[in-house]
Amino acid sequence: MLSSYFNEDYYARYYKDGATRVAEPRYYDSLARFISGYSDLLGFSVRSIVDLGCGIGTLMKPLLRQFSKATYTGVDISEYACDKYGWELGSVSDYSPARSFDLVICHDVVQYLDNKDAKAAIKNFSDISSGMLYFSVLTEEDYLENCDKSRTDSIVSLHAANWYRAKLSRYFRNLGGGAYVSREVDVALYALEHLD
Ligand SMILES: C[S@@+](CC[C@H](N)C(=O)[O-])C[C@H]1O[C@@H](n2cnc3c(N)ncnc32)[C@H](O)[C@@H]1O
Image (cartoon, rainbow, N blue to C red; front, top):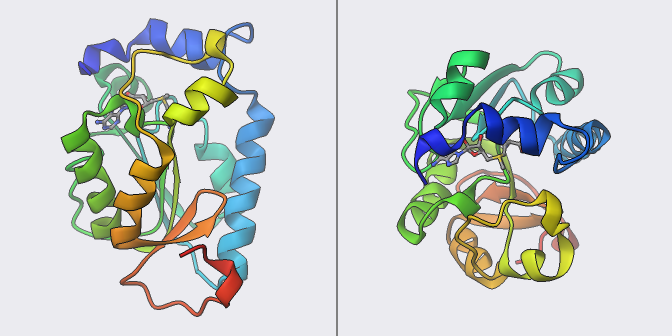
C-alpha cells in the first residue's frame, strides 16, 4: 500500500469522525488496561513501548496512563502522520532500532502488508521485543463475520487466522487475547496461560 494512502482523509474517516470511526475512545482505554494488567501479572517491567503503525496515536495516552514510567515510541509509514504527530517514519516490516522494547504493540496494521512484508513484520516483532507483544490484525474470518463493514477499510490483504497463527508460533508463545511473548524471552508461564 502506498504510504500516501494514509493521509488526512484516511485518519478523519477511520479515527476522527464519530459517525464513521472504527472504534470509540473507551475501546483503547480498555485495551491499554488489559495489556497493563496482563503484563503486570506475568511480571514484565515495562519501561519502553513501541507502537508500530501507530496512526494518530490512539493508544499513546491510554498506554502512558497505565505505564507512567515508560517511554512511548510511535512508528508509522504515513508521512502525514509522522509530520503531524512527530512519529518515526518507518515500516513495521523492517524497522530496526538500536534497542529492543519491553512492550511491542502492533494494532490493526498488518492487513495492509503483502505476504512477504507481513511475514517480515512478524519476524521483526521478535527481533525488537524483550518482553510482551500485543498484536491484532483483521483476518479473513473477522472481515466476513465480525467487523462492521461500513467502518472497516476493505482495501487490504486478508489472511485466515491460521495463517497468522502459523507464522507467529515460530517466534512467539500465544498468551491469548492478542498477547504474545517471544520464545527467546525467559518468563515462567503456567500451563494454561499459553495456548501453544
Ligand atoms: C488501521 S490504522 C491503525 C492505526 C493504529 N495502530 C490504531 O490502531 O489506532 C493502520 C496504520 O498502519 C500504518 N501502516 C500501514 N502500513 C504500514 C507499514 N508497513 N509500516 C508501518 N505502518 C504502516 C498506516 O499508516 C496507518 O496509520
